[in-house]
Image (cartoon, rainbow, N blue to C red; front, top):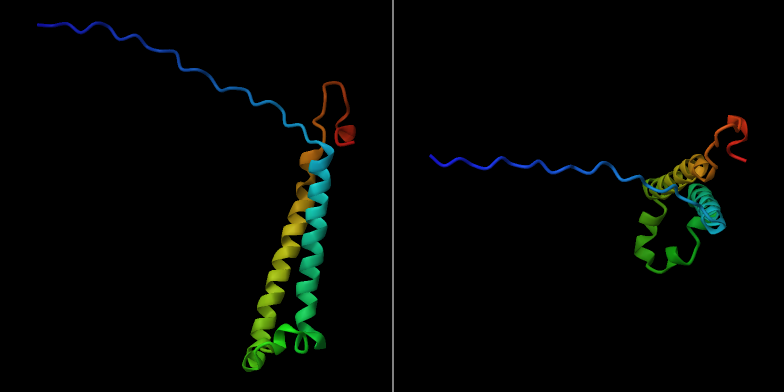
Length: 115
């Protein structure tokens, strides 16, 4: 009867530590530009479909048969809904600005960690 040699267990490596992410100035500026862009676009898309200029702009006059669809309140509401979505994205990104805060060092008070 053949006897199998004992199996050697290989050591499973532990988790590799991930280096701390360092944010540069252009990361912070691009986040602020993205927030401002989303907020301005969102406010525009929420308000503009309900103004008088919506029915008389260039795109509404390209195909006159589509004027009924263009001035439909459901279409205006859909465009405003996209604007609300943009506003939501901008507010979430405002809350995510905390990722740029410095982590607290040992011996440093918690209140000064983000400065």
